[in-house]
Length: 452
Image 1 (tube, rainbow, N blue to C red):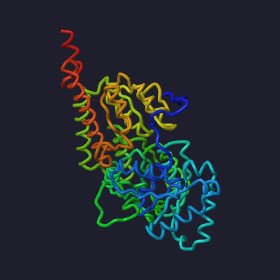
Image 2: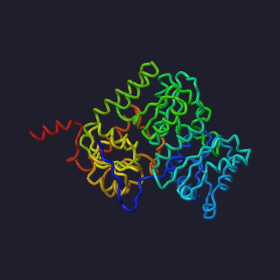
Image 3: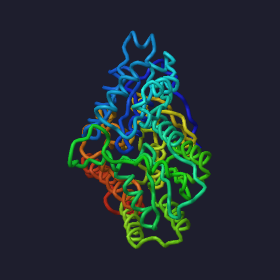
Image 4: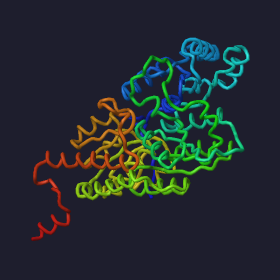
């Protein structure tokens, strides 16, 4: 069991962490025809907007209440009212999501009270669903904001129901899943004859498609009517430990039981997932996934010669860290350094001696002598200074194409990730010369040859 330690440095150097408001805003982008708003200064929103545009390379709907020095002191009720009226008139969203920032949280704005006042004075906003979530960026991190926004959506929109629709399943997708990952999970669930409602669903809104016409709001994602009907599902599947709070909130409100899958990368993890779906649906696993499982097993046999004994340093949000570290350890790697952004119960499961809540400077120090560094694009300079291979994972990934389409869940995604990292190890061995190349034979064969 890993020991979790918090860095005691006076300041963060080359930060790994991204803020709660950014995570909440991205969760709101998983709703159909939604307009996310950050209640804070224009600079806060501009930072998030640029980050998402660079990562997804898409038009990003994100607005601001544009707080300044005066409105910050006097209170932001007028700014929120103006923002809602302008957005309702021009963008005509089906739902608005508001996330607070450190600026307005420090001031202590009573946004819940503001919204009651605004609705009473503005009847044109009466039918517009507005979801507010408190996400101060001076605490917690990206995945916390995502989880809090999902919980707020559930508490605001889901309607309790005594009826249960056979085959209806709720899937709460964690922030560590890409749009391609979410699409893969949906296809797996549907292959058992089940009907999933995914929340939030980035696979519909940020999957990199060319729309038929421009829309100022999100295009695709979870529809409001489907969210309201989540109370009639037979079960809720939470993917990622940080989604457990949202699953429990849904269960408390509707009585729908919930189950947690902390990761869907790896052979055993996917065996458990498909076995659960088979029990839930009463159907057998489709031949397609039996074939994909066989392909993954063959890939693991081919690749394990290059993974065994490798040292890997990882910097990521807790659930992504656990997903990658757990699978790499199963392949025979050693996690030489693990740095994350926020506390989580899943960190105790990470297969290493210590998990540090720190920054990229801490990760660089721990990665010395490693065979691979894994983190988002801001870690590329550290890998270059250390002279070790680098794999981009998580958000942001702004210096490579196709971040939204990277697949690492399911048998197929695990297979592709196995080949990607295995090829990095092989390429690095070749670059360092034939003396370091492990070849295609088992280490046992090389040990015997050396003995002879």
